[in-house]
Every structure is written in structure tokens, then in C-alpha cells.
Length: 352
Ligand SMILES: Cc1cc2ncn([C@H]3O[C@H](COP(=O)(O)O)[C@@H](O)[C@H]3O)c2cc1C
Ligand SMILES: O=C(O)c1cccnc1
Image (cartoon, rainbow, N blue to C red; front, side, top):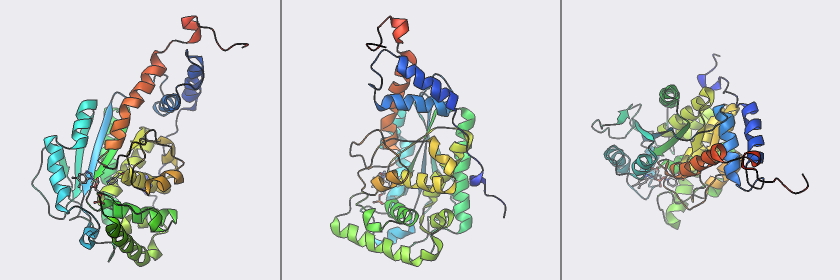
């Protein structure tokens, strides 16, 4: 069978650059290791960017949005129409990510993969309309294989344009009422974990709502059990159009050598799909924050990911990743701008 595009090798981080960056960190006027994780961020970015002076100035943010048929089962605290309404909010600059992107001077692009009820074209939103949302995956596969491939490819193409523009850092986010249900079902299938370890309130279900959501996920996992061993099939059966697009964008970023900052729960599940489709993706992923959604912890552990922040965010839209960008920028300016012991004529460690 012809190899799928997502199986093509990822780029390799520049290990010589990483080694030079680590040496430099040891020479800067501070006790070794005293800048904590900021040191690791700088050396990782140096390796991923192949630069001795890592940067996080040029940030590209893509939001992938789509509707979920499983919302018909009553799995979200909000109605499905909110997905499309939030697209208009992105276009008008009123969403959290709109404000964050503006403040960070980041380029924000929005992709509508497919709403249950298509909306009028919005400025700054690319309407791809691959399908009228996914099918209700508690009854049938969420996507046909063809829809899943189209959605993966939409992410590929979105990333391609960004790689051509030369972003220092790529952030993807999502909008899709019901997508914590899809993400939990997918994570359960991919990790072999019982869904009750992963399911959570999403936009704010109460305890009985979470129990109902769990039963819907359990039913779906039983229905699709024969097909969810392979990551592509799991994505097609249980995913969302926006989750598949995120997955495609992450794989392509790794292939094009663009560092990625992953957002919260849903994006991390897409990152897990990307890593399962192509193990070479993992080195290109930095993780911004730990979401308050309980399943995130397990998904992060499976990828040995240690996010920089844990401040109780649970919004999605790439907001958690965006909140971490200032820290990445500080890590870079410290790495590039501090004096070495030799330059500043400061004595090194006693006895050395
Ligand atoms: C106004 C509003 C803005 C949002 N922005 C992101 N989400 C987040 O909540 C949704 C997932 O939660 P669930 O699975 O419970 O529906 C996704 O759209 C996610 O991006 C939002 C949710 C709402 C209501
Ligand atoms: O962490 C997330 O991405 C998240 C959590 C809850 C609801 N929406 C998104």
C-alpha cells in the first residue's frame, strides 16, 4: 500500500545546536540550573530552530473548529450553535484567543472544518466545510475515512503556509462543542485506559452530566472496539474534524521542522494521535499548560510531557499555549542576552 503522507519522516532536531546552547547555559552568570525550566526551553528551542540564538517572536496561531454529532446525546453544558457563534466571535476579535493573539502580536488564522449548519462566510475565517460536523459516534463512525483524510490534510496545508512564512513557533487551538467527549473517547482507545479515568466536566457538566457523558463514551468504545487499535481508525471513528486537522498540522510541523507549543486537553489528544501516526513528531512538541480537565494528566504522562504552567485553565482555543508564550520569550532573551562569567568578569564556582 502507498505510504500515507503522515508517515514520511519528521525532521531531526539540531543536536550540535542543543549542545552549544547547553554549554552556554552553563557559562551564563548564574548558578547552573538556577533558571529552572527556562533553561531547558531555550536549549530545546535552539535545537528545534537550528539556531544558536533561539527566538519566540514570530508566533503563528491556528484555530480549527468543527461540530460534533455526539452532542445530540447531551454531553456538553452548552448548545452546538456555540461553535459557529464563537467563529463569529473570533472574526470580531472578542474571544479569549483573539485578545491573547493581539497582545502577543501573533498571527491568528481560523479554519472552519465543518459545522452542522453552515454559516455565512466570515472575514479571516477559512471555511473548508468538509462535512456537516461529524456523525454521532455513539451510533456510527464519526467520519468516513475520506473525511478524516481531508481533515488531516487541511491541517497539513494550514501548517505548510505557516512554514513558508517562517514562524518561530506554531500554536494550534480548537473550538467545537462536544469535543472533550471525542477527546476522551480517543484517548481511552489510544491509551487503553478506562474512560472514567479521562472523562471530565468539559464546559461545566455537573456530576450527573459527567456520569451520562461517561456512559455515552463507554457505549461508543464498545461499538467501535474492533476498529480502534490503529490510530487512523480510532481518529475516524471517535475524532472530530478539528481534532484530525490539529493532528495533521502537528505531523506536518514536525516534518517541516517547526517547533510546536501544544495547548490543553483536546490539543494534547490530537498530539497523541500525531505521535501514534508518526513517532518522529514527539521531539517537536513543547507543552504549555496542564488543563484542569482531569484526563489531561494521563495524556501528558503517556507522552512524558511536562507542561510549563498549571494555573487551572480549561478553555481550549489555544489560550493555555498563548499564555505561555511570554515565558518562552523570556527564556530566549535570557539565553541570548545574559553575560557569561568571562564577559562579566564574575568568578565561577569555588574550587573550579
Ligand atoms: C463560550 C465558549 C467558548 C469556548 N472556547 C473554547 N471552548 C471549549 O469548550 C468546548 C469543549 O467542551 P465540551 O466538550 O464540554 O463542549 C470546545 O469548544 C472547547 O474549545 C468553549 C466553550 C464555550 C461554551
Ligand atoms: O483543556 C482544554 O483544552 C479544554 C478543557 C475543557 C473544555 N475545553 C477545552
